Amino acid sequence: MQISVDVHNYMETLVGQVLAQDEYVENFTHTQLADLACLALSQLRPVYIRHDVDFLSALPEDRLVKLKSYAETAVNAAEGMIIDDRRKSRDDEMPVLFSKQNFDDDMELEWFETPILPTKP
Image (tube, rainbow, N blue to C red; front, top):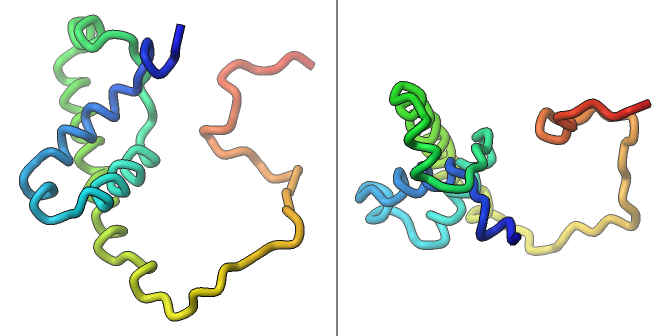
């Protein structure tokens, strides 16, 4: 089994459908569209599936409409970040280097880092 072949995130399909619309294709470069996809997908909960046909046949239509709405909202939110790209107005080209990594082990996990199943003590 290869995960990249056998399993995929259906939200990628929905975000791709939004970004394929003329308003995005005509106004953004290929690189900007890729950035939009990354930013939008980072805002969305993944929906991992094996086969689109099986998934869509079991999915209620109102849920599909809601997922499409989430994808459109995420792309719209990401669009502002691309238009107001802070990287364009940088005056300094000096990289910031850290001598050591500083991790806070007591910091609470983000929702996407929290294990789905509780661990055994």
